[in-house]
Image (tube, rainbow, N blue to C red; front, side):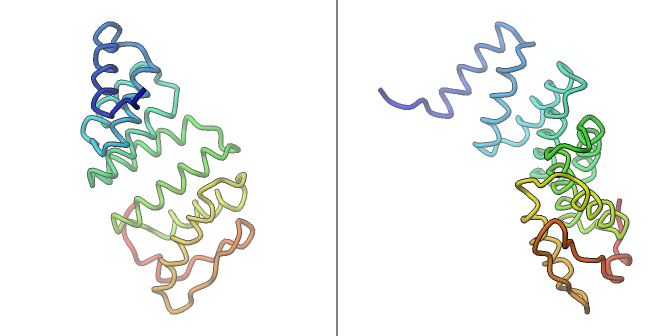
Length: 172
């Protein structure tokens, strides 16, 4: 027995969604398959359908944000991250992950501000440990390494202070 290819999986999911366009689980699987195959335009469209099918579920918004980020549509990605964060409990690891992805998008876009860094630092300091906390520390440490006073970030409890140079950057 051979494994199903991405092309075959997408064809099967297309057939399933033609039978029932509102089948959320098929839509979700299709979005993840588009992500794995780097088809971000299609991922963005199907993630939008997820948000329509389940407007109070943050997953569709977060997947749409990922697709928009990969398409270099950073402003729209930030708006989707914001919506996903509104729908996610603040005491959950998913909230920390969303905040991390949002800040990384701002860094990529060059739109990081002192306020954004402070907000994310507060999320890391008060939120539960997440799988992306160490990644965030790494990203923030690299960002701060460009300042005159870099500070290490080794754990959630030792998130570095925001250097003054970060306040001169623009963005949300």
